[in-house]
Length: 489
Image 1 (cartoon, rainbow, N blue to C red):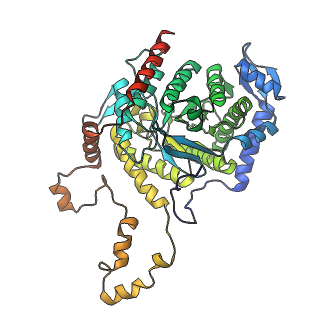
Image 2: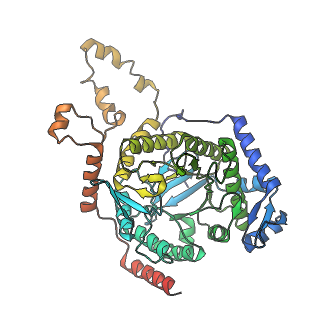
Image 3: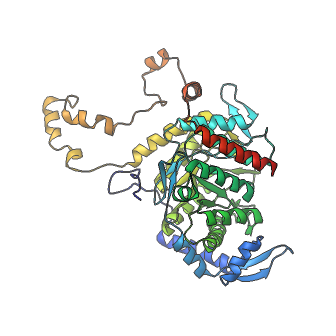
């Protein structure tokens, strides 16, 4: 299957790097040492059997219901070679949407926020199912938001049904691919059944995945039943899955950046082995949610420099090992969509694209991942568009060097009327929609608006005018029946 065009169009790709080749090898070898010599707790009998049958060492854990498993480095090496290095993802309608792997960068929202901030009064409210519907609709209209997550946790829904209702709300209000969350295998099974209805068959769904499951272990070095149950389900159904620990530096992981990286890699790789033992060749994404505990405030920062460096190292390791990765972009620790939020969100998006991070979520996150802003999603959409323009690089060829054009322009004293200028104008110059390029007089004449004002105006236009493509009536009814059966089972 052909991959879509990459985000750059030249032979030399602009890159961002924090690690030498020797650094990468040492980090990888250290993660293997943790897996092989220290081991980890496994709280799932099915996973335990897979590991035993593969020749792993099994010891009793610190609790009666847990076991400590030590995986030989050779099994990790084998697993990383059987993981596909590209995962093709399709939208709700079956159209090719993303190729996860290499250095291709995509962006989307995050999930399960507790609050949403309203930008006019800068006040937040507890999130509901309606917030999920609205966020999906907004993302559906934005060209640089490539996938969606729920954005919000629906406080008005029974927790037992919240994940499935969130999935349904996203599916009904956007055609874009989904990264879903689930409480357990039961939720995931229902989402799988819904997706089969949308595709028409299980065969079609396996060939054209619609969603990617977000899954994680518990740091330090624990793999609970629910996490492994979902991981194995995804492997057996060929559903793409992210297995990304969230070790907190100074709390549930070492304080040092290198130690933080090693533990996070080890926890993700441990899950990768189980996943590939369950179904070799199934699609898998590695990752680290590299939170940093601020000892002065007791907050876990999304945008601390140490967080960014740990995250960037994980991206480099995924490229080094040729494994698709789970990333971040467009987040801030600010409480409201202000200058701090714009700076932090833009910096992270820039780093993700230039480092080659694949599936970058949490666009619009504020308040340490507790609050979201629809206006910030719209602002980041424009930031990503500009950064993608820069990432295309500088084409150097006979035409772009303009050696035959410079003398003509010099003779006439201007280049405005040169055919070369007309030829390249639209392709070379990026045009903003929200960022201001007006003179002071024109800006004042148009109402002295801020970036946030303009984002808010665009938000209202989307909410008033954008109409997501609806699911076919027959399929919608079948989906309603699946949800009803889930709620009574």
